[in-house]
Length: 223
Image (cartoon, rainbow, N blue to C red):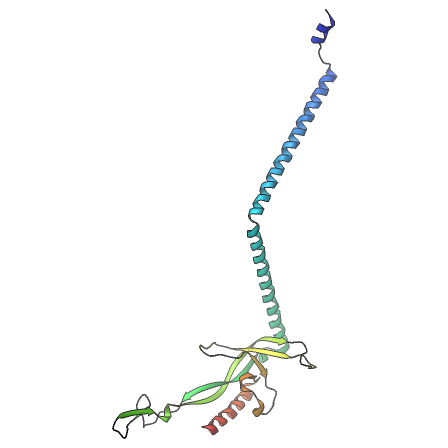
């Protein structure tokens, strides 16, 4: 038998078979890692595409979360301020009184009808009428309780040496078609002639009543 036939019937040795098996297993491992990496990249790309599509939605959710955080932060700070105000002033000083303007109609007289009109005949003989004096309203003042809901201390301004302090009040019950100036200055014991009734607040009902009596006396003098 010639050498060519010997090569044709050549069988690999055990060592060569092991080498071939090792090469095959190594190739399979590389293929598996390649497939796994490609699958990971495919999933990551799909997630990125989803995030890209939801970019505006995510940005809106983030902005809403920031606004909610700022709102909750502001509410918390206001709550702390109110707690500090209660500690500084005490619960009793959170309540004040102001001169509330009231309009009452005079008692009805016996010269007019039920609508408080006086009827008469003109010199030309025509019927006419006019409102009776008792239909007029009389203004008077009485103390009304208000609550301090905000305490504000500003920095030095207008050359003042002490910080300006502002107290904000509100009625205990809202009234329709009636405005109310929230910021009021506590009464400091000055003469009533120098008090501005539209922005003063009294710490006691008795002081406010005395001021209301003074205002009512002035109204009576002008009537």
